[in-house]
Length: 389
Image (cartoon, rainbow, N blue to C red; front, side, top):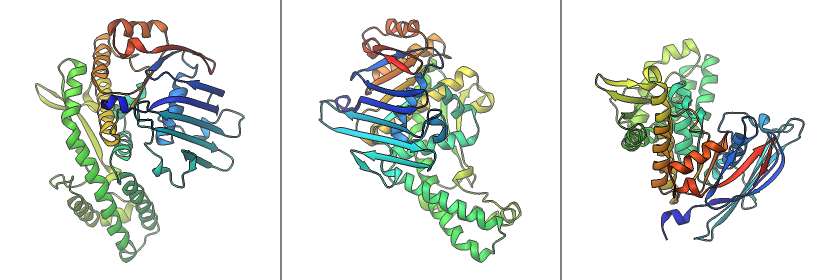
């Protein structure tokens, strides 16, 4: 039995009052499927609902209220995931009611008191055209990417992040109220301790993943060198992948910025202000893709980041992830599209569910990689929130 045999595949997906779906029940083939439909038909909504069972939020950043079908009282999503090789079976459900603001999540029939305990049960990675914002967008987009990857792949990270956010919120409130240094002191310590754990995990992941990112970018682009670098709002000479040194760097920055923080009423040092640099290497040195990269370079880097995320999930779960591809080839040239498919075909991956606006797009992929996973996917049609299998 290989690692690929241990993959959890989505056997059943049930949606009720989710986005443009009134009621739908689907049974997916183990290999996966290609879902074809016009823009606005519900393709992305379907993948969004499936991935909701991984992180319990929209990968498009939409609030839960917007996921409830217009006029409905609540949405409900249920997925059954199983491995034929190991016999493992997991049921994950999520529901949200706007009136009460209540989100209810169950795993194997047991309601979860803390969402963090249910995150990552499925083991899925979603590739989307909106991933371009990870490279081209504001630093918050890259911090969000890091937080999701590490919440899924690094034990203890989510708890440290949640603790840091709680401390940051309280400390900012005190700063806005012009609290005394004595009142801030315990929160300064807590900020450094929890922030140090967050920074250390991020820095360690970036350091460990940069080589794989560079290799993947090279394979997709056909020769472009690239790298990742963690950019903290701290002294960069500290060994930030060490939690104690990262905490000490935050503490030193808090002390240095104390006057400015009181003037502005906000915390100016810590992982909430850090960034991830996505760099390309050229004859004149490194360039930041956010500022100087071409559209093709940025899209290549975005796909490579998702590929590295898939590696992280695979290592953390001990099995390949479920791969969701939301029309990712629409804005890539044929060469890059083909090389991405070749990379996916070589990786140990699980079930693949992809979407495309036209049947010809899917047939092109099947022709390009005859005998690969692309040629084995079932074809479904979607229109008006209804799927024909």
